[in-house]
Every structure is written in structure tokens, then in C-alpha cells.
View 1 (cartoon, one colour):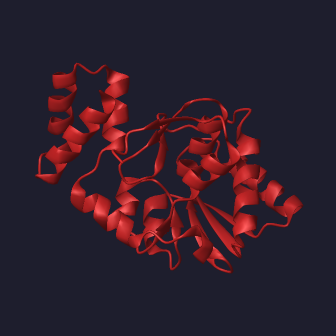
View 2 (cartoon, one colour; view 1 turned 120 degrees about the vertical axis):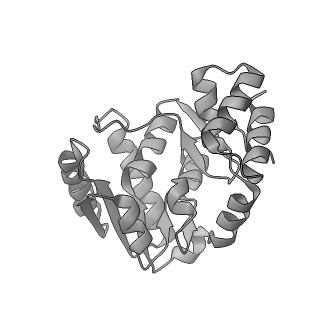
Length: 216
């Protein structure tokens, strides 16, 4: 049912329907509850968006020796959710997204450090030369997370630059290197991006709860 709903919503979006009204129409038709509507809304995209994003995705193997800009909370919280057994959505654009949303505050959980370590090890294996992590300055506890990331990077010998910025989206779009994110607003406007979280979850979290709404 969720796959059919995602396909219907994507069909409507492809024909210019407004996202909010289209999601209500589909949600009402399939009698979806609030959580199901969130899942369908996060997984769907128009045909044009799917093709555009696919055309600007580059393989992870192309990162060797390169700099990578990372959407800090977007990347971290999805890996945290996978480690915690939360739902991970495989969206129509093939990105992995979690069901959580930031509400102005970040809370460190048991999975935070392991998630950062998995990300760091994957980036090291890919041969990424330097990582620019962007964290939302307005989100409380961003400073504490930055200190943790700095400590992990220093102890492991990773070249990480962790920055607190007012708008990570703006910083990512201005980056002169590929970006790692599943944020639709960034994916639709960046020059190049990599599907980093998908790789980490598939290779490092074998028991992840993946709900495939991609339609493939």
C-alpha cells in the first residue's frame, strides 16, 4: 500500500500538483495515518527530480583523493537511526532517509559515536582526502557534537573540518566539491552528490530495517 501511495504521489508531483495538497489527496485515498504520510512524502519525488538527481550523482569511487562536503545532521542521524533499528526509507531517488526530524535540538544517543566511527571508516576506505562537515549553528548541542567529532577525527587521523554554520544548505550549495546529503532541496540544486549513507547502511549495518518505497 505504501509503495502504491508513493507511486501515486510521484505521479501527481510529476504533473505539477503542489506537494502538500497532493500528499493529502493520496493520504486520504489510502487512509494513511500521520506516520505513513511522512514516509510517503519523504520517499516520493517527480520524474524530473529523479532524473535530475540521478544525472548529478557520482560514484563513491570517484572520491579518492578528493574533498567531500557533508550535511552533518542529515548524514549522522540516518546512520544513528539504522543502528538503533529505526525505519530507513529507500526513496524513489535511491537515497536512504530516516523518519526523524530535527526540532531545534540535537540529543546525543548511544549510537552517535558508533555512527560517526562507521562514517569515518567508510570515508577513510574510500580515500577521501578531507571532509568538511557542516552543522546547524542554531541547533542546540551542536557545539558539543563538534567537539566529539573533532576528538574522534584527531584520534583516528582523519582530516575533518567541522563547522557550525547558520545554513548548511547554503554552505553545501556553495561548496566546490561533491556533497553528501539526502536533503531534497540540496539534491535538486547541487552540482554533484554522493549516496554516502546508503553505502554505509548497506555495508555496515546488515540488520538495518529498510523499507523500500523506491518503486524499482
